[in-house]
Length: 436
Image (cartoon, rainbow, N blue to C red; front, side):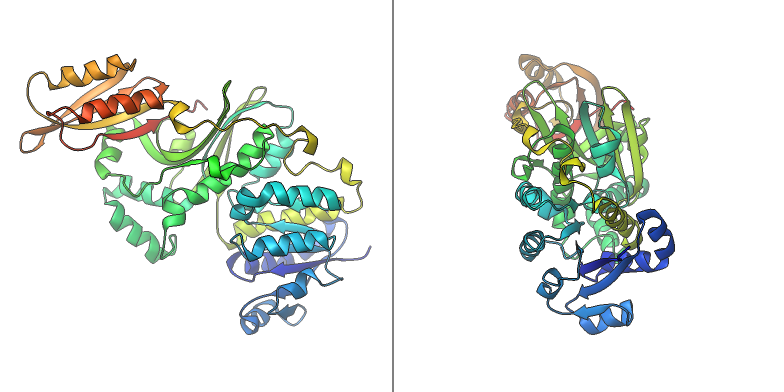
């Protein structure tokens, strides 16, 4: 059969890894796909460097449009990143009747609904396994492996940079700033780490998984984001004392009122499998009504792990090239005319348990006033510890609550902070049991 020709956009870390896997495993890939898959052309801003890396058998250009307009290219692999030029190129490739493989979570979280609609109209495929959790095959799992299930919730550690920082803060007792500097030195964090540490990267990935799990459009603009940059080492230590680990968690859950879509630091019981995912590793915990909870663990980034997912998508597309478009697995798991317009719950309507750390003057009656305000807002206490005086007669009180709506905890915190016996702001972290 005629070989399938690949046009590669971007020859960076993942692009180079994709070329390596395609070349190194060419025989195995051909056996799986049923025909040869050949990297025909690649576009790179540094064409000379890319030519040296890819070898003479690959045509290298510096104009990305030469790839998407090339009539010999069957599948365009977009590994540029971002959502400006990438969107233009992906839509142009679709208009030209080419299939697309992408690792671009931002592109899909912001523009996926439009991209998939265009692809549906043209009868082409857009595959995106590498866009979420690197080499972990979570997209195929949600689209196909769990198709018999009504997905109840998904919880994921889906940003390796943040997970590395939180692991080091716990293991070494170091400050956030010191561990961030170490992560940047090791290459785990960018010079500007905002995208990772403030939850944007995890939010993009969570948005994609929520669409697949619940059959809803991409709605990143409705995702609640709270990062780890303001975490204090004391809270990580106190959480440990109480039997919890702190992780940056992406959580989406179907409720009677709508869909929760949130990223934030979360206390998880230390006995849970996902609480013991450390370093730069990723994990996704999925709860289906028939199967129950299942955990998917592996490398969430890196040249070869991500290339593994990219090439798997290329193989899948190759296998399905001759199939009737109506018989292919839908892009968002559900049939295009069956997507639901479920509302995304505002964070104030979300129900969770909470960790509170309160600095209070160490005198009689203070604790009674705090617990009174919690009770007035319908908040019951699961656990309470009082630490010794930390400075100027101020002690720290740590409280774990039972589940309550966020707007109730916010009212209670506002009242506590108005007490003249309370010093500074109340630290609030959410908690999730995540039974696995």
